[in-house]
Length: 101
Image (tube, rainbow, N blue to C red; front, side):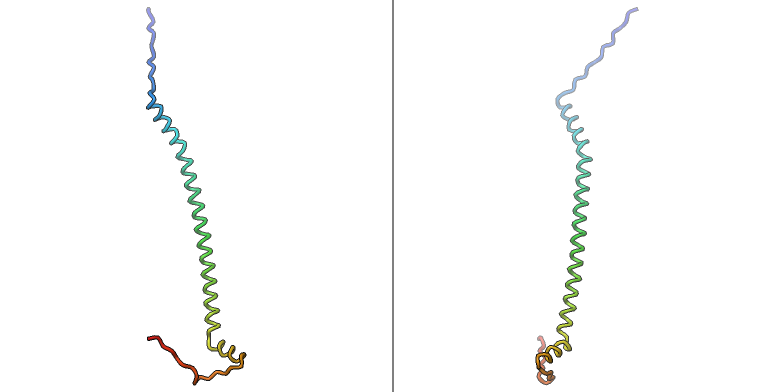
């Protein structure tokens, strides 16, 4: 009985196939890294946005406070008080009303 030798076929990989495999491996490894990097960047941007929102709210409160101070200082009683401290008197007959057209 004779033994038949089995010959294995050697399949050669072309340069183009090697290039395709290399590109596929690089993409498979780079995808998770790029996803993590983009999420970290997004997280950093969201943090900065929240900081800016907080700064805007603080500035708005400051602006409101200053507007209230302006209204208090422009009130008639405050004007009369400052006038009396300066030795001036309040005379309603000398007040003229100016209206916009």
